[in-house]
Length: 126
Image (cartoon, rainbow, N blue to C red):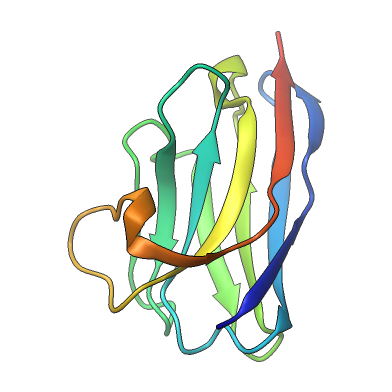
């Protein structure tokens, strides 16, 4: 299994941008499809973006489509989530996770991920 560490969260005003990073502290990411999942207090968790192991294909939740971009650099063993035009409703803890098996054509659910990072807080103020 791969061990994951997220970074890049913080406090930003609505309309601003943040870039989250996920690095493997042990193991390699290149064998896995990877995703970002977010959890806000009192709300159901949501898979926001996923990317195939090669980076050739991505999927996004409708709530972030056109604003967020997932990318990966297998040489550096990292995955990133560029978040633009942030809204207060994007406030959540964001988790990086490795997908169990390949990536289909619909967003995976929480149960489809194997290894998880510790999460990084993103807070968007009005």
